[in-house]
Amino acid sequence: MRAGQEMPEARVLVLYTGGTIGMKSVDGVYVPVAHYLPEAVRELPPLNDKAYVEAHYAGAAIKPLCLPPVRHMHKRVLYWVCALPIKYISCEFIT
Image 1: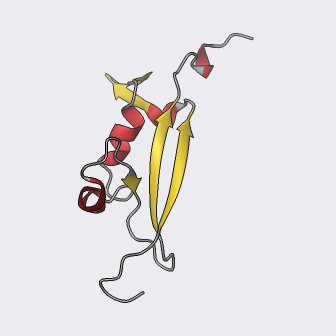
Image 2: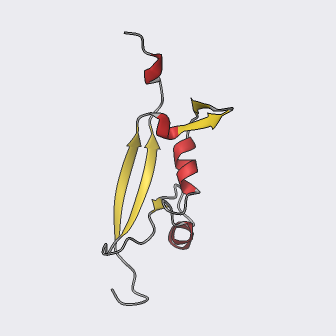
């Protein structure tokens, strides 16, 4: 890829169905919080290139997340996290 040349984009839809990874720590306890996972990931530079998103998707109604450039991968990976409604927490199930 030549300098200044735009890389093609790969697009991924991530369906978050629940689990600790998407919970927020509140007073030392993890609790489900609506839309927390995509908001948290948006602030993590290893998982989101904010400058790329702002440069290319500033006017988008739903902005994607974008992985930073990955060595030997000649594409930018854009992804959207769709959090499905959390109805149950697995630790609350009684068998």
